[in-house]
Amino acid sequence: MRRLNADQRHTVTLTLNGQLVEGQATPRMLLSDFLRHELAATGTHVGCEHGVCGACTLRIDGSMARSCLTLAVQVDGAVVDTVEGLAPAPDRLSVLQESFRKNHALQCGFCTAGILMSLDTLLRDTPDVNEDQIRDVLSGHLCRCTGYQAILNAALEAAETISKETKDA
Image (cartoon, rainbow, N blue to C red; front, side, top):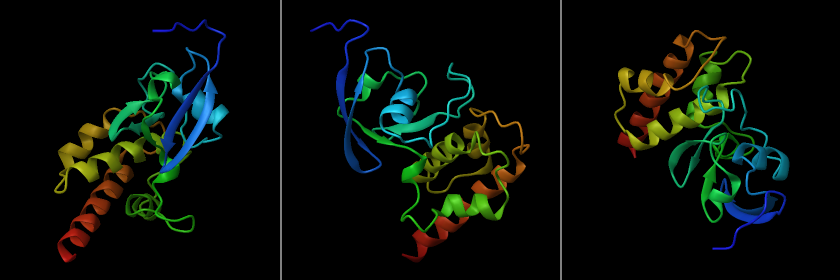
């Protein structure tokens, strides 16, 4: 294996929200910084930089991950989904995003991207999600503004809508 010094740049190629992209990263560059500064994908927020707050949560190859704990070079060849990829079209919101809007489930919005990514993953992986499962996912996120009730209400509403759409299909 070839070792890179800390200043050398490495080409990182990944599928970001369905599009093949590439950028340059040093070996120790965090994925959050790579997304924001190299790829101009600024929807992923950085809060604590220690993996505690959940603001930087995204999906790597279908699994939730903290981008502040992941090196950019680790996702070379991976599929990365961020909050920018949740909406089905530029002028439409996803069911979950629409539920957040209707339920006033965001205030300052800083934690929202990570919460949306975690809840979207839960709703995709768990068709009949319950309140305890939603609360468990929310326990990995720090939100100073909402008090979580509006977020919980939005997630429950989105789960109900998705369940109904699935049954009607």
